[in-house]
Structure formats: C-alpha cells, structure tokens
Amino acid sequence: MRAVLDANVLFPTILREILCDLAQDGRFTALWSERILEEWRRAALRIGPDAGAVAGAEIALLRLRFPDAILPDDGQAAIDLDFPDPADRHVAEAALAGGASLIVTANLRDFPQCLMAGLGLRAIHPDAFLLDLFRGGPAEVVRAVRAACDKAVAMGGQMTPEQMLKRGRLPRLAKAVGG
Image (cartoon, rainbow, N blue to C red; front, side, top):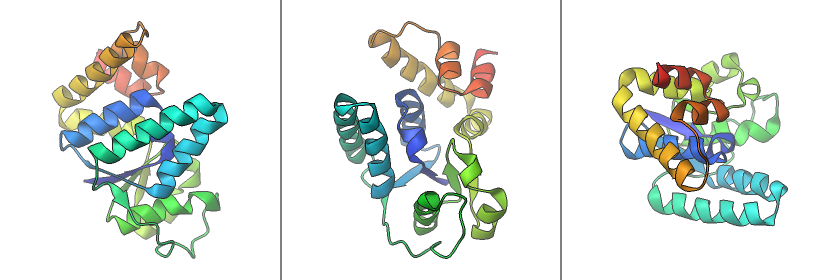
C-alpha cells in the first residue's frame, strides 16, 4: 500500500514518528513531494525561527531515512481539477505521480470523496489510517506508539501512550491501544 503523507501529518512529531516507524516496518510505503516538505517547513517557520530550524533538521533526517519517498512535482496529473483549496492540488498530483492509492491528511474537507474517487484516490484521516493498520497488525502499531511515547517522555513529556494519542488527535487509536 502506497500513501502520500500530507504536510499536516508530517509536522506533528508524535504522528510523524508513529507513521514513519510503521512505514519503516513495511506496513505501507510512505511518500511525499518536495513541495509537501516545504509546506511543513513554512508551517514551522510561522511558529518561529527555532521551529523552522528544527523542521529543517527533521526534514533532512526524513530524507536520509526514506530516500525513495520523494516524488516528482510535475504539476500535470491533476491540474485541471477543481479542488476546494487549489493550494492542495499538489498533494493529489504527488499521489498520482507515485502510484499511491491514499492521501493521509487531517484536512479531509479539501479532498472531497467524489473528487478523489474520480482519481482513484482516497483521502483518509491519520486516526482512521492508523486504526486500519492496528486492525491488520496490532503489535506493530502498539510498538510504534510506545516508541513515540518513550521519545516524548525522554524529552520531558510525562504521559501515557493513551494520553499522547489523545493529545495528538488520534482518539480512536487511543481507545484501541488502551482497550
């Protein structure tokens, strides 16, 4: 399964860590474009220059960890389609260029189901995506969640995995992992 990860799921560290660990385990093939990575960096810069620098470092590490994940930005595949937010069209273009069937995004309203279906794509919220992965192999997902939680605790964030997932806007996964 090939899935494009939108900038809004790469930006939150906990979510990115869980998704990338599962991709590295072979649960799915993670894909993104340079434009998606740049969108993440710009979002971090809006927080401040330090956040932008951290995002730049994280993006560099992501490129090293997943050298085959970067897709071309040719701007041709979906150019004539009318997206609710034309600025998100490049994400669908990346998915088409990479032969992905899914776009993992927290911004479902800008990827209408009828438009996506016409492209042979499906936009899915990260909570639903991770829940699907959990149903297919709970031990791997729990391991990825625990690894992310261990990193958060090591950086001073005292929380349980369930609390971390709820804070990360993954309530259904939190319920599945906690129950």
